[in-house]
Image (tube, rainbow, N blue to C red):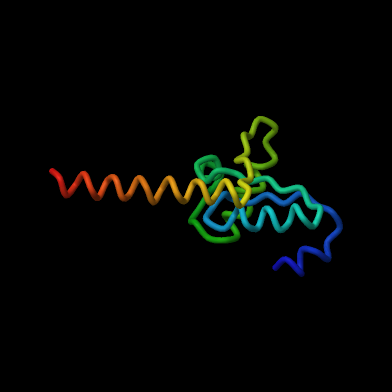
Length: 101
């Protein structure tokens, strides 16, 4: 996908923030594109019918085109590493306290 997008002139790419969203946002930013990540909770109100890729794409464009839309900041690799450590620690603490109960 990165090679395909690299052939485009510089564009604005709007994506729903998801598991791989930060990775792809960083890839597209390195190519010079402007990337906007939209939180799924802000996209959902714009889905008019059943959920599928085409309807999601229309909803993301609609949400991203709103001037008052709050976009999700793109996390750097280091930020995601720290977030991962916090999540692992939280799970360990939760599991340990469950055993003690």
